[in-house]
Every structure is written in C-alpha cells, then in structure tokens.
Length: 472
Figure (cartoon, rainbow, N blue to C red):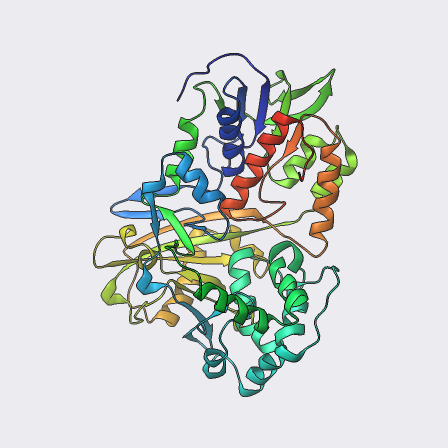
C-alpha cells in the first residue's frame, strides 16, 4: 500500500464493500493529502465480492461479471491499471435459455429484458402460446402512459405486453437480476428507460425497432454486454486496497454510532473508543446505516430502515463434460416463478469464461432464494445442494455426482426497490444534503450492480470533499 503524502481533512468511510472501497480510493485519488480511514466490521474487504481459486477452478462468491452499458466499472478498472485484465464473454455462448415445462428454450433473439427488438423470433418461440404472441403484438397499438407515477414491474409488463410475456419472459429475466417480488418491484427505480420508451415513442416495440436501426448505423468496436477480470473480481478489490495508504484500512472494527460533535463527526467504535473526523461516508447496507444515523436525523434513519432486503444462495458445482447431456450452448438459464422451481437461475460459468474450469470440465453456478423462496438463502448447505442439484440435473440431463462443490450464502444482501423507491431515495438525499460532511453510498439507492455501486462511492467522495449536496 502507498504511503500518505501529507496531512489534510480526516474522512471516515464505513463499510468496505465495493462502494466503500471505491469511495476511499476516490478520496485518495482526488485529495492525496486527505487522511482516509476505512472501517469494516468483517475480517475481509470486498463485501459480497470474492474469488476462490481452488484446484483449477475460479469460482466467484457472488457477482461474476459486470455490465458495460454504464461506464463506471470499466473506467475504474482502467484507472487502476486493470484494463488489460478485462475479458469479454465467449461470443459463441451469448444466448440465454428460459425454462418452460421442464425444458430449456432459447430466449427469442432480440428480446432485451422487457421488450422485443425483433418480432419474428417472438412469433416463432415455443415459450408463448398463439394467444400470448398475439397479445404481445398488440403492444404496438396500446395507448402509452405518459405520467411519472410509479408502478410495479408486473403491472407495467402486463399492461404493455400481456400476462404470458410477463410470466414466461420478463419475470424470470428480471428476477435473476433483482431477486425481487415483481408485484412490488418498481419499474422507475430499476428499468426506467422502458417507461421512457413508452412515453417518448408510444410503444416499446416501436422504440426498440428504432434503436436497433440506430445501432446498425453506428461503427466501432464495442465490449460485450458483460465483462469480468481474468484473475477474478477479487483482483479489483485487491487493487483498490493497494492504492490506499498503509494505515487506512481497519478490519474487524465495527462503528456503532455517528454523532455531530462541534463541527466534526464523532464515531463510536465497538469496544468504547471514539474518533473525530471532518467528514464521513456511510457505505453500509441501509438497515445498518439507519442505526448509525438515528442520532443525527430520525426521519432519515426511518427512511433508510424502510428499505427491505432479500438474499440468495449460490451453489457452484463442476461436472465432467460427458456427465451433462445438454449442449450448454449459452451463458445460462433463467427460471420463471410459474415453474414452481427452487431455482432462480443457472449460470454456465465456464461457458461464459473458459478459464474458470479445467479442460473437459464444466463449472455451473445455481442461484436460489430471493423474494420467491427467502428461506433458501439460509438453508443448510448440504440440504440446499440436494434440493437445487436434483432440480438442475433434470433440466440439463446430468448423470452422477459433481466432482467439485461450493455453497455461498448471502442472506439480506439485496435491497428491494419497491414501488415508491425513487421518491424515498429523493427524500433520503434531500435530508443528507442538509447535513454537511456526511454522505451515503451503496447498492440501496441507484442500482445494485457493481458499476452503480462504484459510482455511488465515487460521487459520495467527491461531494464530501467539495461540499456539494447529494444528487448533484
């Protein structure tokens, strides 16, 4: 780790997940003289991010790549000197499958999360009945809603494309990302561009077709939709930590309270110690942030505490290729709620990124839990593995036992962006902007993906240094 250069403002960052690490790094990057202290209650950095290298397998503990439609992940990797480590998904395996009646069917080409860019693949897919296809086509003629009132993902999808498209295509795709109840998930907080498409173009189909024509006229190389790092996402955590001053990180150190003391912020540390800082960034989950900030602003704490969380469990397993009948000619499969399966999704991990398993072996990651089956996020590892692997074996035609197996539990780690989330976050940011030197960062506010977490941390760092209000 680098040495501090000289004295400057003393700033605390609470929580050393990717948001807190990005905040601490940005503070050092923008103000080398700042004295940054990063507090983490656990014994390791990175939060849910981590990579296990074991006997030729590279197994990600939670997220295994990040999206490139927003720039903040790629930009940070480049600034950290990790640009050459970025690798794209295998172009031969970029299709997604959807489970329907016990079998895997290819997602219709051009169907992007909530809307079709091409109608012929939708018209010929076995995932929909003739009635469901007709109802989807009528979306072109359904009058648009042009107000800014929030609605659930389920209500929006059924209103625009009908029940079948929602249940068999949209719900499994969105659930695989947010692990949420679609009847509660806010469309404005998660996929607002689809409401914008409806408002601006009158129809999702019309908007998608226009976007596709526009993209065909563009030139130049692009990254694939998702990227990862060759040595695992832990290399991002390690590189961020290496850029911090040697004495900046305090592991196994819980902050229990934040209070205003004169013109500074006093942190009460577990064990009875207190320390004063010129600024503080709270990058802990919203419930923990609520407890920390209750002495500062009770209403702010109440709003933070109202953000609900769900969790998932991930079973990572390896099989010899000849044990699996399915061709695995894709990146993975999503499972709709109507299938009544314990699975949320299956990632064909070593098909997406070939370096993740030894030659002749396939590494799969199975996701379970979420709002559908919250108890699975904490189920005993052996029982969970028997449950989900039995289900997956039937879908993929797997014979025999796995040759490698690892289970990761992540209960209460995924914030739920319920209807009204945008308004709640606006109030949170309004209240935090009125408190000088105090900022929030994390996945509870403007996006759950790695790039969004990075962005919230970096914005919080810039605001605490410049004194700008939240949301600016």
